[in-house]
Amino acid sequence: MLWVQHKKSNKSVAFARATNDGVFNAIIWDVVVDPSFQGIGLGKVVMGRLIEQPLDKGISNIALYSEPRVQGFYKPLGFVSDPDGIRGMVYSRKQKKKK
Ligand SMILES: CC(C)(COP(=O)(O)OP(=O)(O)OC[C@H]1O[C@@H](n2cnc3c(N)ncnc32)[C@H](O)[C@@H]1OP(=O)(O)O)[C@@H](O)C(=O)NCCC(=O)NCCS
Image 1 (cartoon, protein in one colour):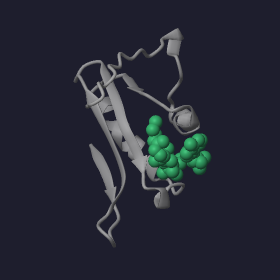
Image 2 (tube, helix red, strand yellow; image 1 turned 180 degrees about the vertical axis):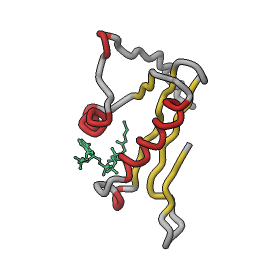
Image 3 (cartoon, helix red, strand yellow; image 1 turned 30 degrees about the horizontal axis):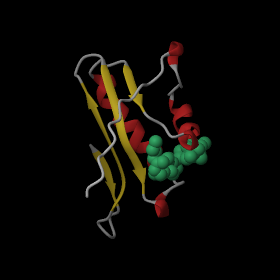
């Protein structure tokens, strides 16, 4: 998990986390930059740092879920959609409504 803290206000302005199995696979979760700090390169820096650790461990597959509107952010960082035709699949259990 890593975040960027604004020195003046002590506020966290960028955040992301990754999990990995220590061998083959890593997944990046929850990349988010405070709207008033977007567009100045923080997202790119956070992603660069987050990728460094699994790559240093020799982990070569780093996956993430991307909303369509953000694919243009991830693509220049080296992420591709559906590599070799592989598609992500999700089992999503619907929450029961509380009475
Ligand atoms: C997506 C997000 C993390 C980008 O962070 P950011 O700090 O604004 O991005 P950066 O300033 O580091 O931008 C790096 C590059 O990506 C580009 N970029 C940023 N957001 C983009 C987008 N949505 N689509 C296409 N390109 C984008 C920038 O123009 C910049 O290009 P450059 O290197 O050629 O100058 C940020 O907009 C965000 O938090 N969005 C809301 C949460 C979200 O959608 N997270 C992703 C969930 S899948």
